[in-house]
Length: 282
Length: 318
Image (cartoon, rainbow over all chains, first blue to last red):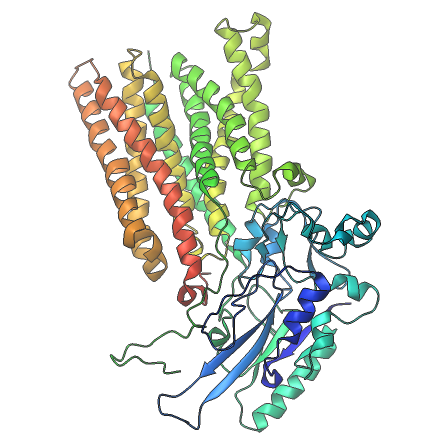
């Protein structure tokens, strides 16, 4: 079975309940407050400690009260790619695909090399700062830590220095619960479920919106690109860049053969020249 | 909202100009590793070239083996310190992942030091620094696998960078691995010239100078080709303060100047002046090493700037 998110941005009201629910459930620390001035978005982006991020795309025409003014909102999240750049790059095997077909970083395995961070075409996964002290007394409870160590990120809160991102609420799914963000979403902009069923529902929604004249399309479903379909996909009505999503994400590992061939040819050529240089000494 | 600027130039849609990608977390330790790892691989190749029956470069072969082994201990040691959790470095040895250059690199380093260690011990035994019987642990054929692994280590770091989402590195999938190989070999030639500069071995130094000339020449050609090929993706590396530093320290001081200095040495030797200039060798070698370090530093730092630019992050190089 593969589970995922369908995020319908047309019914997002920008309440950030998903951000808060995610932080609460996963016990993610505060990132501090910085007033950005970019609409209502003071979160900025996904990070190692922010696994849902609501973006606010203000599109105002130069004239006041233009008829085409609009305010787009989107709750961004890890895409849980079919072909995940982070997972391929991970040299420790910390990043795995779990039984729900979600991409999961095992916090007890990751050693914080940072290669997944640069290998994510969506700029999702990030290293979290090293924390020496446990944040709550709870974290000193050995039994609780042991229980949650493998399926949640709680363990990493006490130590840090590792990569972290959305777990698709692995721990909640394990006991049949809906991920915290989807549960908290008041408009069902975030829908959780079995991926095939979500895609069917999403295509119907796209058709309905297109009939009403909106340029709706699905981002990350029926994807021809090297990252494949996204297990967390989105319904958008503007181009991906407007929401800070890449228009053409590329799976980084596809560039390796070119690199190895180029390097091998260069090394071979220089070594051959070297053989000529070092031939016939004393 | 407007897709066209007053000048008629199309703008690129971004989300408040915020970065689309995450910056590499890599700092100076990674730069130092890339630099030393390259020299280590280059030393292994020089060892193979020098230790052949035909070449008979005893001192260069000896230094090459020692340098290969020492760097194979030092370089990974430095690399471990950049980890978020250095005490978990051995987690890298849980898996072998062909699709991860970092995983392959770890295994390459392990294999390299496994060969470099007995090779260096045997060399020490031959030079009377260890019990004589130990010379048997490093037969001459070990130089071949050590050189092959050395070539791999010179190569994989460039592949590692280009197999990421960072637009500059991604665009350099042909160039960055190739320029890393050239710089690594030039650096190894420079290091061994430094070590032998005062040892009255004019022929060895001339050979190293020739190798250095080939490597630096190839490096300049590849870098210049990349400048044209990369276009807007190359801006962080070739423009601004970073680009200026790169041009001055890697291209001019680190490649062109050594080309001239080494070229002069080679021509003078050809004119049968058996004397080599120690100062010329030292200056040329030092400049090459500085240039090689700055190349790695520029690649890492420009990668950070590249990640910050959402306009190049959206359509990622294939």
